[in-house]
Image (cartoon, rainbow, N blue to C red):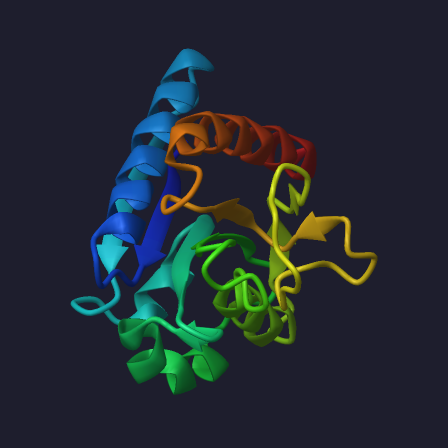
Amino acid sequence: MTALQVAIFYGSTTCYTEMASEKIQTELSRLFNEKNVDAEVEIFDIKEHALNKSTTYDLVIYGISTWDFGELQEDWESTWDDIKTLQLSGKAVALFGLGDQLGYADWFQDALGMLHDELIVLDADIMGYWPNQGYEFTASKALTEDQSFFVGLSLDDENQFDQSDARIAQWCEQLLDEWEHESR
């Protein structure tokens, strides 16, 4: 039996998304080890690795940050057209995003929502939706249709850094639960 292959692909300008990726990698590896699941979790900066590499993994996690007034992070912006070429039909995919809910309350996590919209039409099996409680924002493109969840883990290291580690731990546990449920 081969090991479960998990990849985290992120773009990061100020290293916050990179640090979140590393924390997710560490937490998932810890949980897999604790549950005796043979798994390998790798991380890739999309500035250095093509997005199409992500399609070779069993579970793919994409990390993106929202810049200014709902704009994409620069590495994601330069590879945005590549998303449409990804073969993700039936692939387990999870998303996480970073944003500033107070400084940019009208655009909180917009890039996360835009990425979700690109991936959902590729028939990816999106998992890891995250409750929107505990945040203060006005609007977001990253909310589900009923407005009760973000389309992925939402982190705000600008205003809620002290909550990020706990949110990452809880989200990683949620991902494993969803993965185990889907695998049955």
